[in-house]
Image (cartoon, rainbow, N blue to C red; front, side):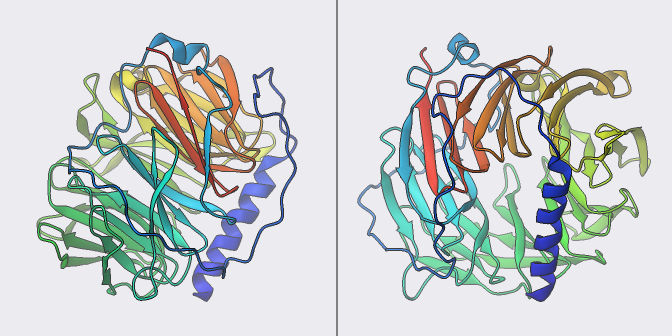
Length: 425
């Protein structure tokens, strides 16, 4: 636990150091400026509730819709939106199931909360006296059948039954869980940890079983992204990126010293149709964006994307999503900027947008980038031009998660609330 606490403190200190004096923009802020309320201790226990809503399992929708309605460029129907206050401490992670009409958020109070994305009402709490996490929930993901897998600082993975607060606890990791991901089109979940391992889980049946433990990292694993089929990439605190074969559990490519400092972001490249390709991108604490070809085990492009006279801005987010990202690679970093690059032209810069504060989260949709910042604002940016169209006051403090569909926006963050608003068809 001490190793996690040290790493977490380092990342927070890095974020604060990179902020500097943020440059303001002309932005629409419907919620106005608000103060910082008292935060309760993270040892507070959540109130538990029974599930009152049953939803059938449905296929998952794309995280980055290529087509959205035109009102996204002008703003939502009601900028004040709907707010569901679920906790008095920060929400650390989230995952959405649009087909089931719900979002799950993981909290520093050790619980997960499931919220109806139409009504903005809480459906259930994933925490009981006998099941759930004993520390902060750091990561969560929906499975296609509606189940939820979560990981926490307590080194536990919890596999929650759909529409229930019952779970299976998986105790294989020996240190805090940094990230979980789901392999597309398979019954496989993957987890990464500060114990320097990556573990693969078969979730075909109601009860999960460990398929393999992938060892090779010499430092805590911070980043993990599943590709289509058998591919998986992971990045660690020491700057190494490893590509794995899920079926064999073996290393297919090891890129030592890919970055100076932590690997802070990973993303697969996607073509114009949004299909995952073999090449991928990495971002680091060194402010560099790199494009890799695992077939040659080489970096094919390297740009100092977020390096300037003031220093280096850690690359916190990378998105390559075909038409959803205007066929560009979009990054958000600790230099308080969102930038777009053309992977078809040696990662030449295309656009840049200034943010009001440190970026914590980012998604893309229909050629727009939506970036959640440390001051609670959500910036809506035209990717091709770099123009900030407007900004919403989505939370009172840092926006740690953003989700979009054709007509709806869902955000969550450090004020313990989930913010939802709609866009006209």
